[in-house]
Length: 145
Length: 145
Image (cartoon, rainbow over all chains, first blue to last red; front, top):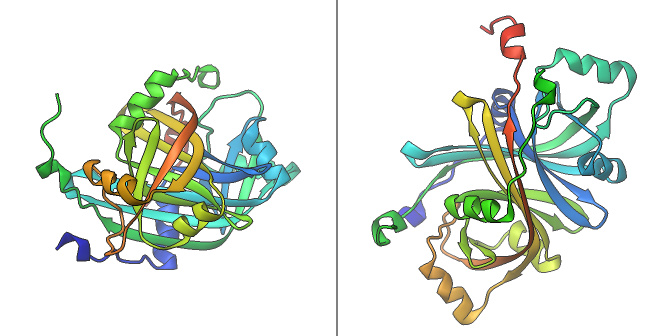
């Protein structure tokens, strides 16, 4: 029966609410012809997701190709429920006043570094869902050592 | 001072241990010239990450371009610590016996569906880190309503 459970679609407003309530997500980006993924701390600023990063593959990747995807989720283990929100958009590196304004956002990098760059993802589409986590193997599998 | 805290690098063995201990991750993949990201339930099978998926953009994406990145993480809120493991590799759709063998893995899709395809990511590189989460705004920001 669990195969038939629904996975409610979140509205656009609900997606943004969850983006605003979350601090950590993962960005998928191009690096030349490869796809990469990186965890990051971010803040919502209007229709943008803003994060700081040191020099590195994230910065190089978005400088070369602005197309990115971003994901936040939460797994509620006890309740066997989870949700996920995905945003797609265009990333660009902020300069001057725009970069300084990021100091007013509650924004810290996962990786500490003396040198910061500020990147904003202008979100073009969001989608999200609630999930029921069916884990029948918990009953079917022999106990592990 | 928090800017100077180190972010310990995980060994390859530690990365695999955390991949084996985790059930949910996110896959970044190409879809034509876009990068997409999707949460999924997976299992480790040797040097492969195996997951099920219904027909959709994930399946189409990896059928068109095998290059993928995969990420698992955990945030330990109380301790202001987090870790993240990233795997890059090549995805391919399993057929016949290989697909049927996936039934022996503790593997369920996030999204329930009557139609399953089984995809394996052959991992070519893993990397991972422990992070200290510096969140000074918790002390600096006025309380929210």
